[in-house]
Image 1: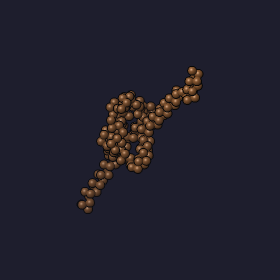
Image 2: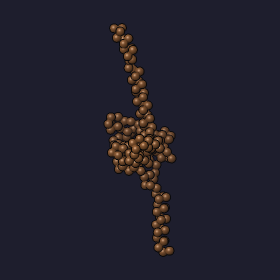
Image 3: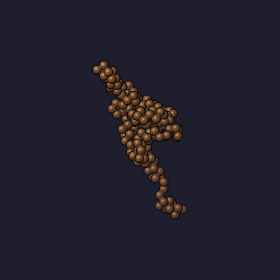
Image 4: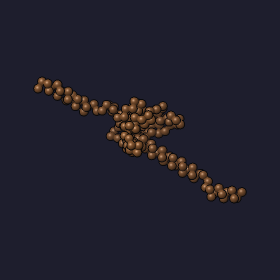
Length: 166
């Protein structure tokens, strides 16, 4: 019995630490959207896959899962790739805006130099980066731009009529 006590004590201690301590990837206090983005940036630089996933929304993780299936790999492997983890570069942030269960933070695009709004959703009381919503918004913007460009481009028929008049 004396040999079992230390082992039992270690098992109970390990169980209590696991129950109270969690995985180590979550913060003890609620992070703001800006702080969440900074934490994601740090996790991405370190290629800490579990931490990266903890800062991403369910919709974003679903999107990553679809991408991984198409590439016949895992989400973890995608995130470990050279440019796979989001926000490895994070130059400047501004204008955090919270509205209920959603938020945005403007982030400077390192390639274009402009600021883009990164959306967030609150899931289980925790702010998560919603890259799925960012992609949806980008597709909508591109569609609108293409439609606008098509509306302003003269049709071949109108060009022909205008040249015939001259």
